[in-house]
Length: 340
Image (cartoon, rainbow, N blue to C red; front, side, top):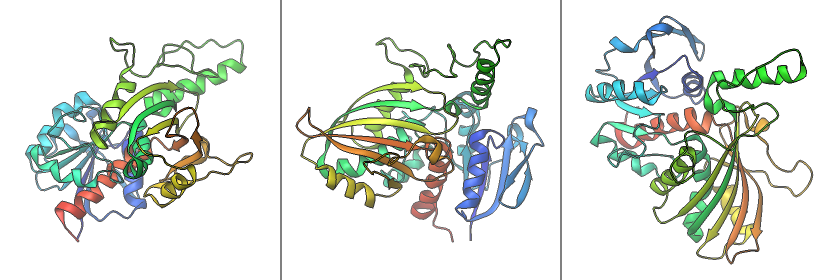
């Protein structure tokens, strides 16, 4: 016996990826509904070998459905998630709306699967930010062994994290660079993204950090340990898909790089590719379409007593969004709903 599943925002990048991953992982689906706004009503989307037509989110009745994977913005989620939850359907939300709500669990199944049990307070489970999701997968097994005191992370985030319009902007600007007769003004980003990097993701806060950087701090504390100190610099780079992170860790206890490498090799959701030779590491292009979070460049930091550096790469549309949501659904099914 399987589940009755709803995908909300099924025509967007993340919604389509959710459908792909549900099919790829053979999630036990008895019935599935795909929802979209009225402007996308009737749009066809693929689910495995099937083609589904989107239904109207505004009029959909969630009564009798087991879980709904939401891939719409915070404003729409604020309207429709409480409705679905009140009708008995567990919401797994990809927006930032509920991540910092103390009554809503923020879950990365490799790190805190037990947190799913707290869904009942609001019938909602939150999916973390894309940059946080891949980082905490790497941090958790190392924290369990040596206790992380401080994290210094610099991110190199692809344009797909900003949606389809940003992908188009990078493509169009790249063409314009090679065609001097073409002019292209930035629309999605404040500056040119083609052949450039922009140290600015989301809005600026009073302390000079951006909200994306603040998210990494707050979410890491909620998912792993409130005592961990985190400082982040988040940068948008001209890559279509795949986020990269350079992570520096300071531990309470000494952790040798060889032991760290062994721990990460055995940890769920991680693939270690770490050869000290040309090409012996993973880049964003190579991670696209993969479920794993890839770890490379593991090495001691000799400037502090218990320091370690590593390079972390993952498909942000998968582990950073759709895959993690499906993994939450799988965990919810096993721990709570107990069907099949």
